[in-house]
Image (cartoon, rainbow, N blue to C red; front, side, top):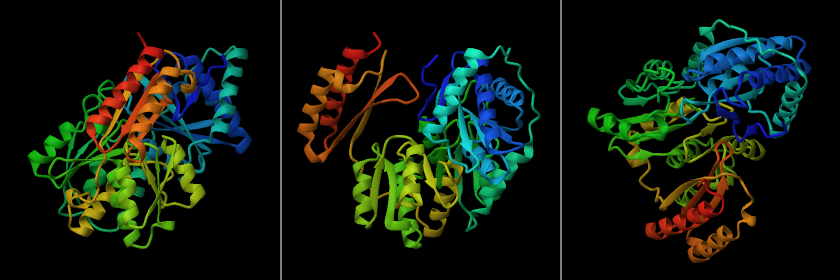
Length: 448
């Protein structure tokens, strides 16, 4: 045992294979049950999932492990990750479990855990559960009996009702396209936006267990862009598999990512006197253009490691109300404890409605620096300081860029990938440097 289970966003892997095999998932349920009994005399845990075909059996194994540990559970069925976060803090649930691999293909799945506060568990608590899972696997003779749960449809409806309660201006007259990525938002988003007053044209809302994120959703926005232009809609929004992130499309078909959303939201919050400390929290991936645009508005931007979990932790430390990632995770602390794609869409729709301006106009002052991201599949995650050729290339490229650009090289927390991000004023130079560093990584530790 001993291999780390929790990455930057819970446990993730190929469904049916370690650590998402039935026995390990069952052990996770038992380990979580032990933590829950320390917190409450009669604990109950809520479970939700996205639309992957492996979701139901994983939910049954988690529930089975919880039951063996003396803990009750309720199944919300297909619901978003932020929906589980909301339900966990709004009800008397001691914890929430979301079964999802977010933007990954359907073969993968994952387990995310929320405490009663609605926050993802801190690293030290995940580590404690991880150690208990190893102990369970080494000592328990359990045959991993699943527990079948009936879906409680009222839980998902409670979440939609809550989101609607945050809307402060009717969205009548706005025409939008919603791409649900055949994921968790598929049976929720259209209802939410229609009840808020908008005219909604949903696409990619027919999940079959295997088409989640497939050529659609937040990672593949081009089809949405075409539909927005064809329908002459005011805007479009695309969600990833568990709808904790959203990417937008303007009326002209331009893609509006998380950086642009942070600028739009920060400007609106500051104008309303609600941007605490004139501060926005983002990650090391945020474009330099966003930092410069915010500075012109008198707004500071703090950077954290990649991961909305780390953005949120910094927001709490700083008392910030707005933070997020370029990838589309945006956190409005006034309303939520995690990134929420549908909540973000409501806030952007409100801003469009109030201002009378479209997304093209609202983002025209954002000068986006050319940025390229290269992913290299690796056989091991070796410290970069031990990869001499890679270090040499990084140092040489950083020297050439000077203060007019950035280079970020890191390993993915959820996949066997090294990620190389290069940003600068000249696209040709950015691409050249990115390819040089990626080749060096490929030669040293890449999968042959």
